[in-house]
Image (cartoon, rainbow, N blue to C red; front, top):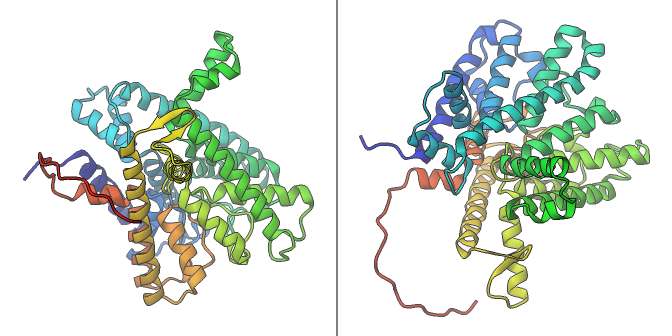
Length: 450
């Protein structure tokens, strides 16, 4: 047998984790009733956990026991940080040597272009994740402990903090997600903060932390510090800010007079609810307003935000903010008749445009296929089916109520879509394709009419 390539190890790692989790969740001890969960539902739950999606066929709070909930949140943490990152962390704990093969896996799993400084980066990711999730748990505990008591309140705080940071969108406090907390600023801003931090990407974290140290220790001016950021950080922060603001404004306008969502809220509460909806569509899956009650206009905006998703090397899904930025600026460069794509006075390599186009096209093909199959084999409306498939492929977890009512065929379709969305359709194609030798022939170029 030929040795597996790094991308194939990652793909299989996710599969093995999903199937191991599904076996544990199928055990009677994993449910509150003591009865075994049908395997298709256990597999669906394991997939949505590892793929940090959040679509559920069984209510996490009422169906699963503490054991089942512990398995789910462990799968979420593994899926959010990545199987390879978690495994590397275990190597650190056991004081095992990180081999060249391990470094190649880390590089591939994070989509980085270099192996320089990978081990320190993983250490910082694990430490940073622990600190951020810990702060989130403390903030949640201020709300949950008075409401549920010390024991379950602390457990719910830890569970929801991990779920929010990993952009999973699963909770164990309500059967209607966070709708009961639509006017609670602590719950809203804690959740949004964790979602955004998890979705920014660990490379951006590094830039932000180094910039903060320069401001505090070296007294470097903020403007100069921003100028020293790498292009990746500038793109991620600017596109993330734009999309959150863009989504908030449109959702606020479209839902302002909607009696089923925000009409009864005060003006500040409407702004807060609109902001939360814009943030959660960036692949988080929590909701403070019923998704099934959204207007078609808001649903379309939400799907647009879902497809873009978060940023590279983060816990979020989607085609990613950097991919979106490259395509937008490519269009602008064509309109200006410029020969290259320029962002923040830096020229983007042409090969990145080809990759961005491949990511978009392959994701659209997978999306259209899953929507078509769901319409054929299930009973949802066109809008509900589109929303479900976009949510699954972008690993969001928002639904218009279709998930609990899926047929077995529908569940299988969504399971496959969630898996492809987490590992990336393009990674799947590369992982199981034969490695071709580079051709030494250069064919003549010929122009075409577009």
